[in-house]
Image 1 (cartoon, rainbow, N blue to C red):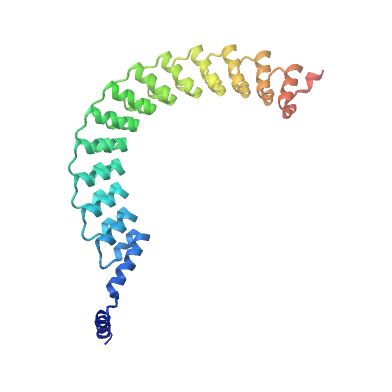
Image 2 (image 1 turned 180 degrees about the horizontal axis):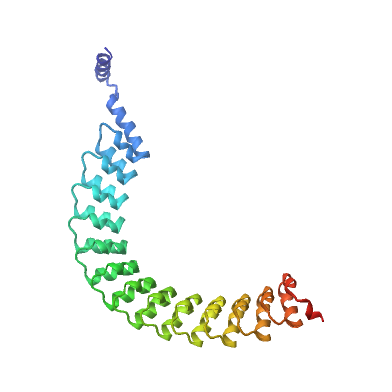
Length: 315
């Protein structure tokens, strides 16, 4: 009876020029609002329309998995939201693939037919995409390492230019350089001192470049020189504990950088101790032979240093 009444009402409205919505039309509106808020609500939509599907993938690209009839427009919008949705695009086009790799270069792994243009856009967006390039060229590899030095790991045929660019972007990429040169190694440690641990043949210049970046890198220097050690403690006073052969000059520079480095000075002098407590009064704790002058300077710098003053200096 209700069905007949609904049909009668529709005929009545039609006769009198009254616009009414069918139950289906009302549901379509509700579904449209639902997918605008949560794209994956498309899963429960019984009557899909192109408009509903388009709004769903605009809100969440992965809603594409619930689209019954894919269109180029819907797929294009999906990959714009998430390049990885290219994996579930049934019919790929150059335009769809291009948008996908522009959004996320790693979507290249799902491209069925690669082109130089697609690959170039992919590695420009994400250097890691190089691992999915089927036919590498020097230009592609160079762009990849410019975007991400670590991409050097996936370069099949390395050149000095590619390697140099990679370590300039990320010094630690030196780990993947097959044929190291002093120039490449130097650039690597300049960018990141920790790259020294990947240098096969160390030179004083390379080591110097590394400790200037991070003094603590002295730990990885195979052959220490006074100059290298001096630069290390200038950068990081605590590096003194890594110095194999200490000199008064090196020790003095170390405590100038950090008074508490006095703890690692093997042969203390009044000058070194005085400099240490001037920088940090609490370094008095490590002074082996205290003098009134040293104690006064320490307490002057930090009143808390009084707890390290030995009673015998008053005698």
